[in-house]
Image (cartoon, rainbow, N blue to C red):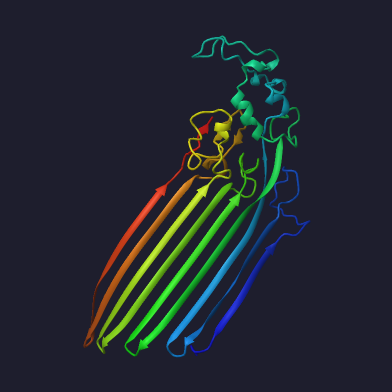
Length: 349
């Protein structure tokens, strides 16, 4: 009976409690197992607003999720930060550092090695010294004799939310006319700092993503069905759809490169703000700082908005054993996309 109120509620909870262990855990990363929590809940209700005339239905589903993870990566050790790379040379002769101001500038032939693999203090970049302070200090050592590699372990969590709402109303004007309306909303967020903190970024520590992402989806539909005669029916519908996503690095609005004295990177406090991606390479492993699609899947900043409007009218005519249908479908769409496949704050190797 549609003149009665019906409803339901539900909840689904998944949680690993303290002491929980999983065989999927990486045994080479020290520290406790990261917490995982997911809670989905919601419900629905439907019934009459005006008996035999106006009916309403509403449902919602909410999701709150904390997805933990851990990462083992590399950061400069204390001697390296002062230009002392003797530990690298002791580990392998392939890590000898040469004075770039000597020898052939094009080929490197004839360059002089720095004594003891130590770069003189006067040769160190003040900008680099300021940027490297965003790296945390090592907290572990995985390889004997190599305190500079795989020397930082941490864990983090990716916070995920989802909100979904739907409502529909049906109104019966009379025996020949009925109207319906429907509105739907879905909103999602993802947020996680990098392994080195919000502004410094670095590899993702909670799952595979670091950054802050917001997405909103909305749609609306209105329809009017009119029975003009026993053999003639007209359907008129209007629809609207809206999609918007905004994905930015943590530290959005800040200018760490400018603060360190590096020109040409943080040109404003919006699209080129945040920590640039610094990819410091070596023969076997990289040092990552900042945000980028390759470092932590932050395709940011990314802005996209789309709207679509639709008008539809269908006329159906029954003639004997045949039904004829004619109508029109008119749509108008708008789209704006500002992608950042390459991080707009800059990517440096």
